[in-house]
Length: 114
Image (cartoon, rainbow, N blue to C red; front, top):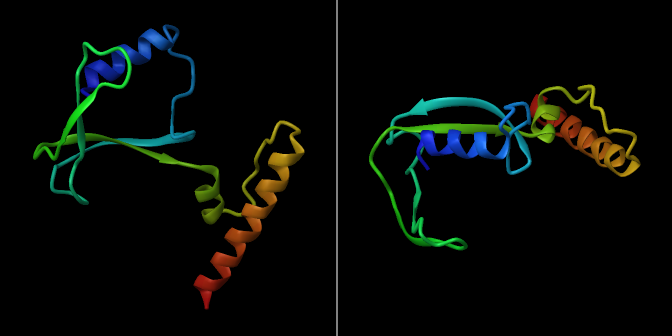
């Protein structure tokens, strides 16, 4: 998808520009431009814009610069800081999951010190 199409779609979905954008339910951490040869092959789906539903008609590996959106989730952030303050909105299931993640990340950090 070209950047102008992405911007147009974002503006259509959220005309105010105030909603948070995620990639795979994770926060977008950084946006940057990369050359095609950096860190593996760029994958692009070829789509038939005239089709309203599933419109993938092919794929390609283009050899051109691209814009990369990198996401970071809470679990990854806990690897850097297992004591990171997290608002779970009072949801006990989420609080329990976060505590499991904290313990997992503390164990990984301890293993890396050895």
